[in-house]
Image 1: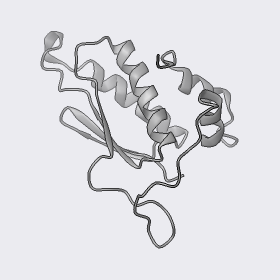
Image 2: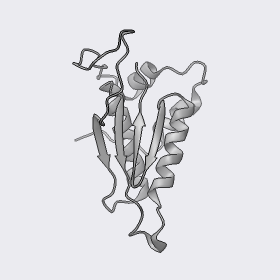
Image 3: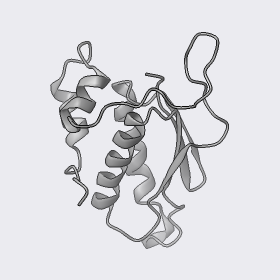
Image 4: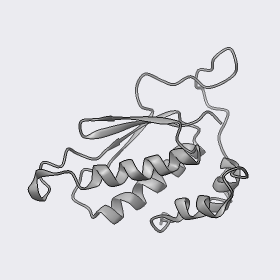
Length: 142
């Protein structure tokens, strides 16, 4: 059975760390001590040795499936942690447009965007682009 982190654990952990002392490796070790980063992948690298950002997402998470916001936020954190462990650079998070939400207004998308922006403040996420119904997220090269 997959070990699921309670929603907000990554953010709370990062808040407890001083931003100047924050280490991605420490965060990964803290929440997944038996898993090490796979840096030996077959990804393309630039002349500087940094992994290039691919044109298409390397993985995606579809949260557009009728679960509660709390469940979706928890799943997003787990997905993000997994993508960081796998040293991915570009991922997609599908939230839907909110057309089936009460009043036809998106509920999940603003919550995911807020969480993305908080992760950006700790440099866990480099940048993102909001599209209609999904986010393309660029993760830092580690």
